[in-house]
Length: 293
Ligand SMILES: Nc1ncnc2c1ncn2[C@@H]1O[C@H](COP(=O)(O)OP(=O)(O)OP(=O)(O)O)[C@@H](O)[C@H]1O
View 1 (spheres, rainbow, N blue to C red):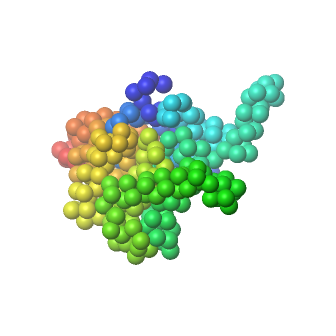
View 2 (view 1 turned 60 degrees about the vertical axis):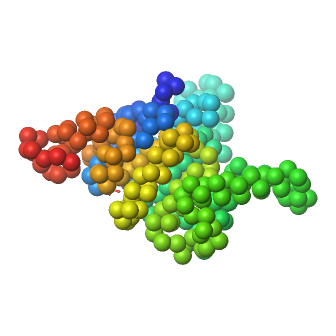
View 3 (view 1 turned 135 degrees about the vertical axis):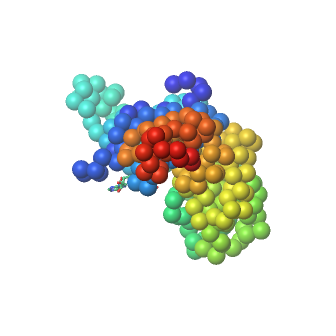
C-alpha cells in the first residue's frame, strides 16, 4: 500500500442473512486527511465503520490499515475462517488459529484505529476522568505484581495515563468537568468526551460516527474546529460519518458516497456537490434535475 494511504478498503462485502448491506465497497483514505463517508439513511455507512473497527467480521473483501509502522489486515486480526490450504501449511494454520483464539477489535485499536459511536456509549456512572482512564487500560502497566508493590514503573505509567487524560480534556474543552459524572454532562459535552476517549488510545486514524448529531450550530462549529486541530496539530487522520452536509462540505478533503451498500461517488467536496448521482440518491431527484447539496 502506498505510504500516502493509511487505510485501504477493497471489495468489502457484508451480508446479514439475505440483506446485502455492503456490496464491493472500495475506497482509500489518505494519511492526514479529513474524509467523510456520506449517504442516505440505510446506505451502509455504519456497517462500513463496524467492519473497519472490528465490530462486525466482514463477509468478504480486504481492509488494510497502514499505521504504527506496519500494515495490519483487519479481517485477519479478527480471526478468519480456516482455509483448506492451511492444512498443508502449519505456519498459515497456526497464524489463523492465533487470531481465532486471541484476535478481536482490541487488536484493531492497538494497530492504530479508534472510533466513537452514533449512540453515545460512555460509562455514565463513572466520572469524566475515569472514562478516559478506562480507555487506556490496554496501554498502561497492568502487571498485578507491579500494582501490589506499587513500583516506580507502575506509578510512572499511572501518572502518564492521567497526564494524557488532562491533555485531551484540554483539547475538547472539558477540564472544568473532569470530576463530574459522564451521565451529568450535556449532550454536546458527552460527544466531546467520546472524542477525547477515542484519542486517549493514541490512534493514527479516528472514525467519528455522526459527531454533530444533536448539536446546535455553535457546538457544531466548535466541533469542526476541534476536528481540524486533530488533523493539523496531532497528525490524526479523521474519517467521519455525518448527515450535516454543511459541515461535511466545509471540513472534508475527500468524500465517499454510499447508496444501497455501494459506492456511487468519490472525490473532493466540489465534485460531490455537483454529482448528479449523489443528488439523485439524496433527494430522490432525477439525475438531470437542477438540485444542489
Ligand atoms: N446487525 C444487523 N443485522 C441486520 N441488518 C443490519 C444490521 N446492521 C445493519 N443492517 C442493515 O444494513 C443496512 C445498512 O445499515 P447501516 O446502519 O449501515 O446504514 P447507515 O448508512 O449507517 O444508515 P443511517 O444513516 O440511518 O445510520 C440497512 O438495511 C440495515 O438494516
